[in-house]
Length: 176
Image 1: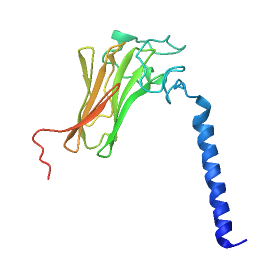
Image 2 (image 1 turned 30 degrees about the vertical axis):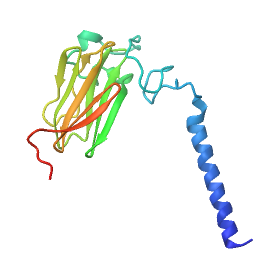
Image 3 (image 1 turned 135 degrees about the vertical axis):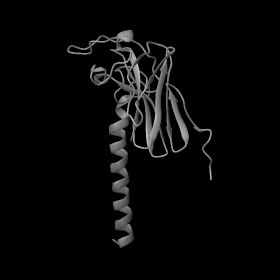
């Protein structure tokens, strides 16, 4: 067999292997779209899913809904079932809107926090803001109402909601 034939067979084997790996990873979930996004509630659509409550797991958070207002999601253990509802990658940063069904609360996270300012989460008429250069906000009770997370990075405002994301230049910053 020629070298070109051997190379073609090898490439075919590699392609079949990659296809098999993809089918094993994604194909077992079916087409119904209810595999639950990574970190999302079981049995829910991938994106977006409706915000709704869930029972607090054993040893879970001491706060729920309004009692979580101003609390740290990691100290209150709300991160245990916390899911990223929407994320935006731009200008070397990732902004995430996070939600805990058990705690019925949302918070915002940004990575890396270095080089960012004004990380803010707004939900249900309440606002939580991270300290300058902070990587996450405290929680705001979200229930079934929408939430919006925004951060300033590289002269742009990055924002996400449960269903959408956008970028806007921050006024006063020139684009050259």
